[in-house]
Image 1 (tube, rainbow, N blue to C red):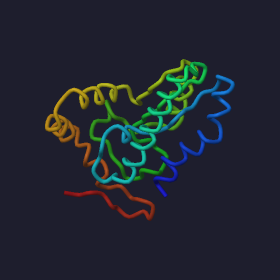
Image 2 (cartoon, rainbow, N blue to C red):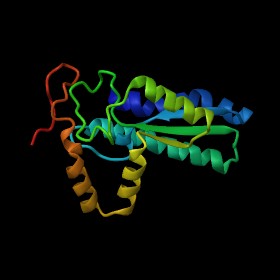
Image 3 (cartoon, rainbow, N blue to C red):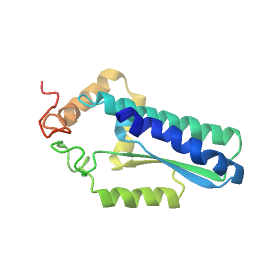
Image 4 (cartoon, rainbow, N blue to C red):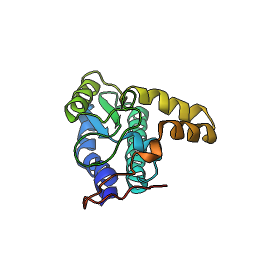
Length: 171
């Protein structure tokens, strides 16, 4: 179900609307992925896989638009951190000043800003730009040290899951 909602829905939406956007050379495709679509997090294997799929789909579709010169069709990839919607009940952040649990209204405002300014990628919060750059520049071991420092793989320890029971990857 996670793959269907987070990944396959991108394909179905584009199949339904993409051709018309390309024919009119007008439109805006917004893919709401996640920072989990750029990095892997313990306790979120299926979610990360689905969001990586969404981000990969988005990158490929944007590149196809560029190749066919459909420059009137814009794309925005949105990659937020955890959003306070109840979906991640029990998740904690160990660096709330840099990586806060996000208010849904704030995320909506960021998505609207991305669309109105034709931002191709939008990481929320902005600290994630540094994180993604770090992971692109440094070896795996350095990235693991960064994850340990920010306790990223501990954020899911008290995650309640769909049934309300803690199911985190406690070590």
